[in-house]
Length: 108
Length: 249
Image 1 (cartoon, rainbow over the protein chains, first blue to last red):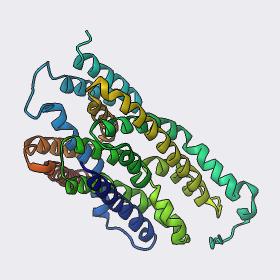
Image 2 (cartoon, helix red, strand yellow):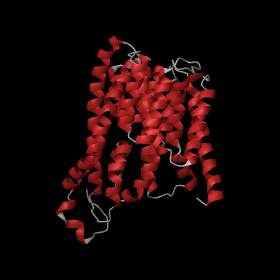
Image 3 (cartoon, helix red, strand yellow):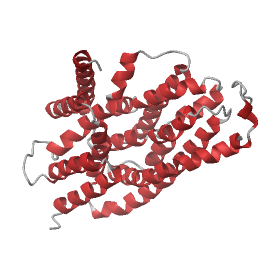
Image 4 (tube, rainbow over the protein chains, first blue to last red):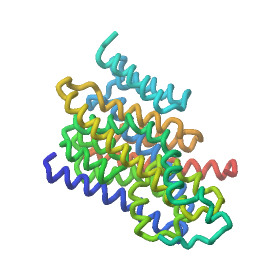
């Protein structure tokens, strides 16, 4: 990415982020949001973040890798189990990343 | 600034003065600020490792100020996604802030745009979580927006400091080679998403979004990410409507 592209990236991301935050904050005291829209918004974080992570877990090098050599997938599944049991963000990150580094860098 | 909140007997109470509210807000957000610290550093290092310049990395934190979308953008830059897709993804990732704004809006009706603009700019998961309980307290304080300002400002300054630390660390790490920093982002998002999956419509949303993302991964410019997100949202909503009809919410 060249300098112009990086500047465009920052300005574009700022415009959409501030646009959502400001427009809704400024009008939400005055206009009531449809209940259906509000319900849909609740699914946004889970949908986006899951869609972002699964290809990296199953296709770490760009193509399917369903094997015990796939350190992304093994550590990812472990992190999902840790997160489900502990519901603790920092613990999930530390243990998940630790296991990943052990597998990825073949420390053991 | 003159507030036109209806006056209450508590209004002159010294515990509701502007600066008391300001520092109470900063104190309330402190645990969340500490929790955000490693992410600030991780973001700085990750963004450097994908080839963004130190100024661009700092600019993202200073001007965009939206942690998870900054992570996503850095990841997408590393995968060679186009500018349009990154901005569109940022929009979708940050749509959740609309939820926070909807919830805060009624409490801020009396404020001028001189207040609303900076408050909107600094609206994050953490600032919302730290201030909403204060706004919900019915003590009639006319200065609750100072509570918000104190919390949000501390969050903002801290994010800048740790982004900078991450940039410095990232520049040193580059010589070490690929440590798999990208996985730090994945494991962070797993830690955020999994506890959100409490009801089965949310699980269906995740399965559909994840499955579609895998199937559409070959689409150019990471377009599959947007399509998969929309499919996941639609599937979750559909499941919720179906559940609502059979179990009556």
